[in-house]
Image (cartoon, rainbow, N blue to C red; front, side, top):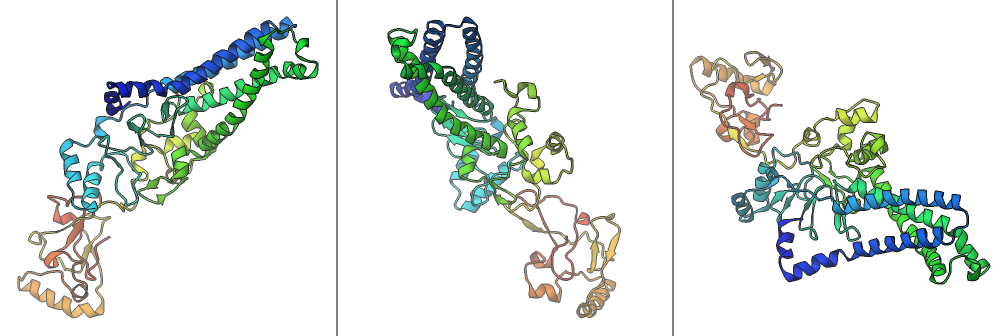
Length: 443
């Protein structure tokens, strides 16, 4: 739980709300306790005539009940976790962010702070996602829960029946809880079907159970069928979400990626890989409520990562993706601000022609000769004469004059910082390509 929720609990109203949240859990627990009495005592012990069938019925009943209650308890008691401090923005930066006079300034501050964090999700305007209540950069697939009063990793939804958020740490337990609850209800309904039919076929007096015991068996069948009908749709829906690697929130609103924009299938790695991301690689732990999910909850492989890997094995393909911080972070940095700064021409070699472009694949001393177009040959001859006389040059050509601003300030060559939000400092001019004759930036 978050700090705000902890402070609310100290007040009488907050304490009452905390108790009120446990009412659905207490209701489910009471129904399970009553079903245990109705099945074990009334149906098996008091009404069963065959002792061998009774032993097998009780054996499988307690097996399914144990798995059901174990998964339910782990879903309830597993904490939503706490976002590390490295995702938290300092107070002075938060004040600066709130005082920003434009969305572009806020976007620049957030992008600059998150430049070393493995985040690929963005807002509609291309900015890094920021939680104003928790004062943190939201990790991918994380959302703020107003009930838990904190940001939750891979939040699926807040379930009142477990009084907890279904998230990265307990999603496997939640799916197992739904599955074993469905199996439990179907088993109870199937094994009590015979006595239910006998109740209506030959009359209540033909049952061995007496008094209220007959009605316990009757209502046991009805309640088991009712819960089974509601669980089959919910369990089937979450199995579908597991196979497409999507949360409930993402099914209603597609996540927005830095490269590619909104995409509901952005995390879809294939059915088997999606299943293993939730249930793990070791099949021995798939159906046990023990934590075996892949990843750390902060970064996730994406479908674009998968397309880059040519391995055929789903497990190898998942592992070969490596660190996801370098996956969707690659490509065109559409949300990063681009800064341009003039370079000093004083350190340039005077024996270098302005039409010589440095090749990015050779040593700095090796030059790639580019034949200038015919309209510039006269100007080239003029510049060569200026070099011979020891005069200084600028890189403004006839084409560059027609498109001002592309060669930097006062005709100086420019460089672009494609990684961060600030101009590079102390860059070696010898490693930066000069402005080509057509006025375009070097590639």
